[in-house]
Length: 171
Image 1 (cartoon, rainbow, N blue to C red):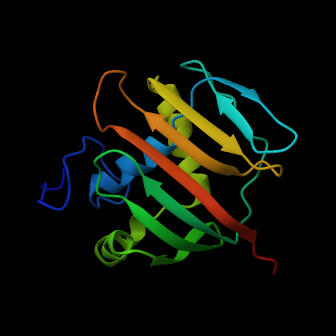
Image 2 (cartoon, one colour; image 1 turned 180 degrees about the horizontal axis):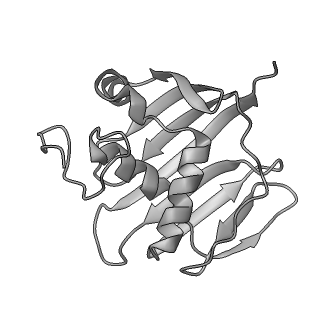
Image 3 (cartoon, rainbow, N blue to C red; image 1 turned 135 degrees about the horizontal axis):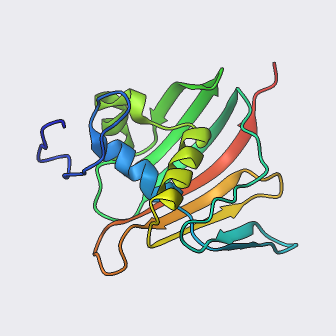
């Protein structure tokens, strides 16, 4: 596990790439969803699942798209707003739109997630029976907000991911 520094709170999750795990923890915070799905005709569908269920939006991630990700909530290293370009299923460019995000992109550019990775982390959090997770989906099925809370009585373990300005890139 990487050493913990003053700018990186301790997280007990190992990243796939071996880079600081705090960034993966942020992604997992955003993705664990618990409950049942409902939808409203005038707004995004809200999904809140009972622990352990594995339902998922019917949306299929395109190979290339852009989106703006805001990561907030809790005391984590992966906080801020990012403009992300995905090409061929991988993050091709991530731009920090605030000071926190600029620092993350500079130190750990490979840890900014695709929407697909956020959804994978959500499924993992469901599998791990996270205390609470909620997701809201746009009419086309892509997530617009993912909220996670790993432990019922823990303070500052929450994560919220807001996805805006999602646009598929046509070839």
